[in-house]
Amino acid sequence: MKKMGMLALLVMVLAAAAWWWNGNRKPAEPQYRTVTADRGDIVAEVSANGTLNPVTLVNVGTQVSGTVRRIEADFNQQVKAGQVLAELDPALFKAALAQSTANLANAQAQLDLAEANAVRMQTLFRQEYVSRQELDQTTAARAQAAAQVRLARAQVTRDQTNLGFSIIRSPVDGTVINRQIDVGQTVAASFQTPTLFQIGKDLTQMQIDSTVSEADIGQIKVGQPVKFRVDAFPDTEYSGAVRQVRLNATTQQNVVTYNVVVNVANPDLALMPGMTANLQVLVDTRRNVLRVPTTALRFRPPAGSTAEEGGKIRGAAVYRLVDGKPVRVAVKIGISDKAYTQIVGGKLEPGEAVIVADLAARKDNGGMPRGRLF
Image (cartoon, rainbow, N blue to C red; front, side, top):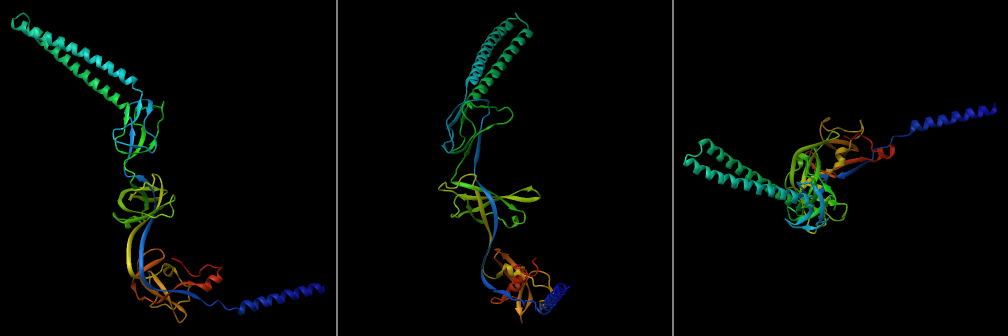
């Protein structure tokens, strides 16, 4: 019983000490961190990602089917317009041409005979040895024979063209980006033209096909300068310019984006097709303007700790210290570069200190700022 009494007494003492501590502990006084509003430059940029591609990428295919007999061009090879890239087995095409040539010769012989018959029939008709009907039949036979010659000649032209198509030639000067065939492979051109080679016309001029969100696309204009980097050369910053803002939108998982095409010079051929570009589009620049840290616009003191100036006002605002208390100052904001935001209106003057954080609140909340963010 004596031990139980001692334990109860100890509990009462601890409870009384805790009550006294909580009742007499004073809340942490606000200790605000401030930054002076100043004048400086603000450069507003839009970030985006894209892929480097040749300005002109030509897909070289074939209009005829066949087996690849030989290949004359390989990856990365420089080619000229008209240069042979590959050849299909021409045996079937040559056979078809020989057949159509023979048909043309036969049709020509039939035409020669029909013309001779027509001449003889006209002579006999003038001598009244044959009727008008027999003359007309002979004339019609000559016309039919002439039509057969034209038909056979067209088939010869078609077979000659197909034989020419068995030799795949480059349509442009450029570099072979991709080769999709090998010797012995059969290509079929029944419903659509298969792609055999991809040729970049001029790799010294590239383009970035980038995606920009609908929230930022209104700021993008043709001609705006662009800075970008690629993972292959992280220490090198490249430059370009917006060439086109395409109107067709792409929607993926309810996210709407637009394709922005950026022109890029590539004189040393260091940039290669398919590289990922992380780019910054310069949308606006303001020189020597009044600015505050963007964190000052996000700061909100807890309720009851402010000496409001002119009552609560909707819109953007910063807070300055007056007699140790935050005072709200309504402002009108301009462009932002994420670190700083331009102030274009309000009662804030250069050199005035604005609150960016409550240091005491950070201690009370385990390092998290007190107040509200909007």
